[in-house]
Image 1: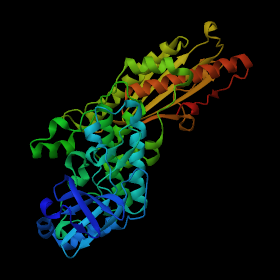
Image 2: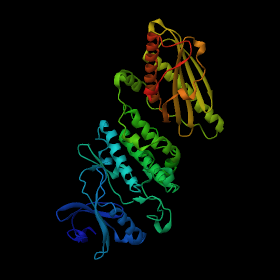
Image 3: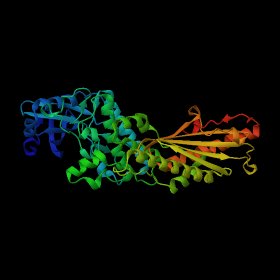
Image 4: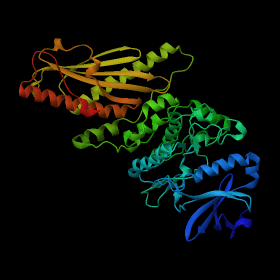
Length: 459
């Protein structure tokens, strides 16, 4: 094909040298009326084998993107079927840089958040057009030489939402995409053919890319062969992000995206999470740095399946309660809070820790106050937890309730259990609480009755 087509015209485009190839097509540098592009020309034999009608629909789908631009999505310049040469082709913008897989070791960690935000923005743009990319992976993301810009490439397996016949071969639900970066529901063709269903697939694939950016190692790199093993790993193996020093928000986002259950994935992830920059350190920079150095991301290991389900849940809740208590104690030391007494309680799926603080002249607190941490194990297998915090003060310790009412609780963390993030946010909350109690004592605003302290600023 390369010898046949080099120097020839195809749909008005003059094909120069071949600059790449894939499983089903060659890519040529091409020009038309002074405009440069990259022409993807599909192999005739493969088109005949898998059906001309399906190929025509795929090409027309890409052609529908002509004139629809996004700064982080490769632009489609033309597409069609050249009758004279009996070839299908798609012409896209010419991208000269490397792809993400080739650049993985070179990308500065400081650029990771911005790059994944750009790719997610392109994927969300496709969703607004009623399309799902289906094959977001490092090889399909172009990176500028200065790492300032990412471009989502290769729109060959685009799929319109709610139109199940397109790209399925001869009406069969065959897997299309890259297994290594696809969620279990896509692998087993159990995805929901809806905006939300394909959004869940996209979130997972974006999480796989973010995993690679943070760890500088390809997702499931040690599990690629044999094929049956990779299928098992994609279906069942939980992913833990090991990237010391990376922003906790990005690690949590990657882990939440890679949750196996698409319903949980949609509950945990939203488009706006990709666009949020890592939290600023503010006046708590020293505390954040110490906490980040002290603990790495830790996810609870699922108990063996031979253990009774009720016992698995009980152990998960106990582990969360122990972690919450340890985090509170460490944070109290770091934040120099007054002496305290800890009380714990757990009744699956909820664990509770209450810290009681008496008056302390050295800390300028003349009243008693309490901090309440409550955690729930939402999904034992995926290590998904939800932790809230509340605080109250009163003249007398006996006035402080054992459990904080739900309306006073503020969400600290929801997603795959990550203890260093919990520690960081708990430390922030304790500083807010201590400041509020000290101010209340100084102003004399804490009366005999119970006063709930506003901790919304730490969420």
